Length: 128
Image (cartoon, rainbow, N blue to C red; front, side):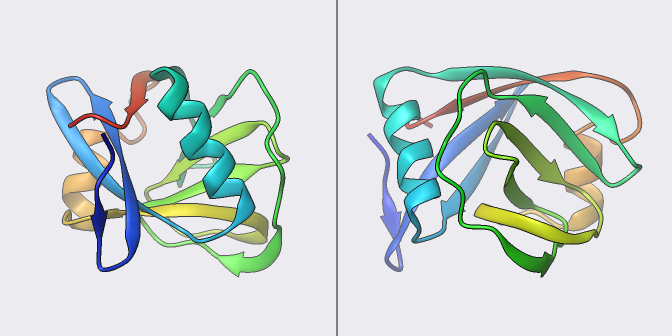
């Protein structure tokens, strides 16, 4: 089951043998994402885009809470309601922040995401 830490709900992103902890935001988009992941693990193929993110089609739409933000490495973003993005760089646009990867530095995150190295499979789960 998902855990909470300092009031934040946590989901996990499994990439190869690495597991990333993601503290979710408190918005309707993040709650909808958590409900989706609670029903069953969600596995996506994410590919590099723009040299600062991995992005993939969620296969369904979630409610958006777009605001004009600048991302930072580790941000989990919902883009256009149906794409999931994990940032390893910065970008400014109107996005919905779903959460942020905890306890990993920017360079280590780039390594885990194989930044610039093509597609990866990510499984989002409530189980570590």
